[in-house]
Image 1 (cartoon, rainbow, N blue to C red):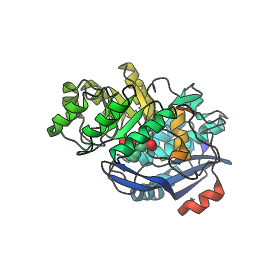
Image 2 (cartoon, protein in one colour):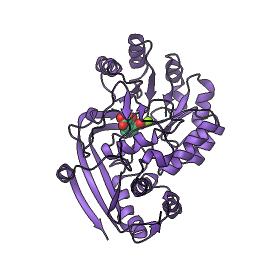
Image 3 (cartoon, protein in one colour):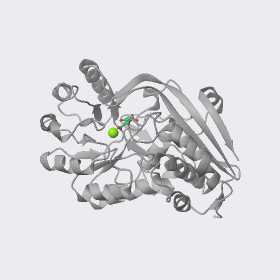
Image 4 (cartoon, protein in one colour):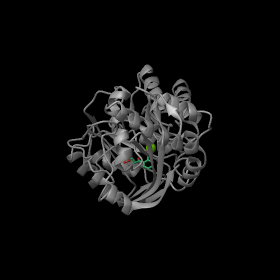
Length: 369
Ligand code: OSB
Ligand code: MG
């Protein structure tokens, strides 16, 4: 195939109301605000969304920073150039430090474009083979009774794992109540960096509940302290925020800081880096799973395709779109059945924009050139 020339781009800011507010240790989200990028080449379009938040509270990237970097630097750099494959796009982005979520938008949109040019599903060009993926749910912080009811409901729906968000003061009692009521469930907790090594008592108590893993208990940028904690816990530590690159993963694995990694394709700069982390964990015989950031149908479809790779052997967070939104910006339903999410069919990400609806939820829009 001849190289793909990027002959146009469109960048939007989109606002989707959330059906229910989502609370994690760092705060509450009431709506999903995200940048949506389209790259164009000879009549084909590749699409991706950004997973950065308005404020740098999950990680250090922001929507305003992403929009500025894309509009002022990255898109002008990309436009008019031709690329043979995603690796060629990645090479253009490598010199820029950090900004993984912003760079991922370009890399992911190009993969969609490239797969469409090859007339193949994204999963096929990534090397994945599954037709459906196992999924669980991530339950935000709320009253214990309510959280338990939601856990039961989602297990009854067939979801394969329940992840409970925790924070100091809302941890051991919650997990104890859910574990006692649901003794056989695959349960995990996610602290979003809310603890330190001074909280060893809480960590030791959590260690007794037979959790599949404990996700990102300590600081977002501290691999070392996670290694100290892992040496004292039998429960596996799963890193999320700490892993931005395959080099981070290498150091975390070699240092004993993690036994399972949550791969978010947006967090790590794209599919190529996701695949490197996936392969590295496979070499260590540790599993990976695909996390989520309350994505719209566009990012959700990207996540589903990534999850078809062989070492995604634990259920991901990519649950039904209807859990998050009354209406999504894609035409195709992304709904799990019995804890299995079907992989969208067709070339590229396999979902298409509902353009009329998209217009009604677009906050602003810029076209390039
Ligand atoms: O840590 O995985 C996380 C949502 C927002 C920010 C961080 C996280 C999450 C989730 C939600 O856990 C996963 C989802 O349902 O998309
Ligand atoms: Mg997490």
